[in-house]
Image (cartoon, rainbow, N blue to C red; front, side):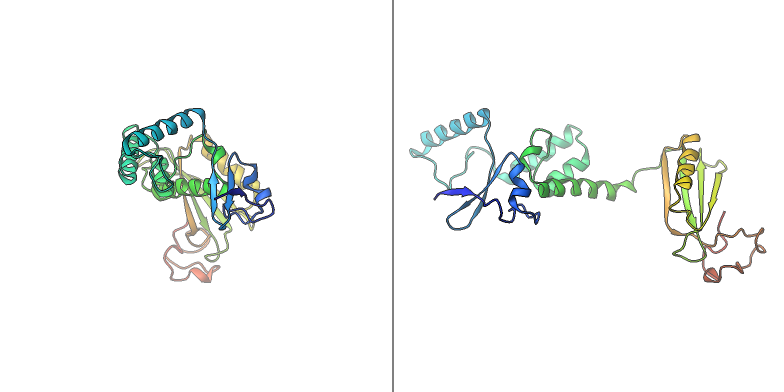
Length: 248
């Protein structure tokens, strides 16, 4: 059955939502369509692979006495795919390959290298990179922090508005925390504050940073702005809530 290149103006088969002419047509492979509307990905074959395929063809003919058909496996003398994939993964582990790369290989079924980037669509590359980042995000919290450790805590009149950022540096276990504070209505977006935090961490050689994902409590100082043990009279939102008096 004849195959022809997908129309330039047709939606790209990779699933990007773009037209073929604006997407995979610029890659080093082609999307082909047969008379029944079936889509195939055509990847160029190197001279080495062409020789290997011809060797497999000759081996098949010698064994079966006929040309291989469309339903016959290309590499009939290799182990079952799942077994071969398992062997590849085990070999990658023994070689000390980045676990994130191994995870992405298992999840996507492909191993992305500099040599085959040009043969993958943007969607395939996005899937690969997402799998790598997924593994690193899930395992990032399991890695022990490295000293000196930097901390960033947020405070505000409620749980959504931040008016104070407190950065701390812990040089070693059981040492006193070194503190710097920044206050303002735009404290989170202010580039001077961001630069100040970076300079503060760089000054003390911070190697890892722990950041809170929400306001920790009231921005006012217990003992300075209101009596110790009482709730802040300026921030009613935090009255009776855990953390209302826990600010630095």
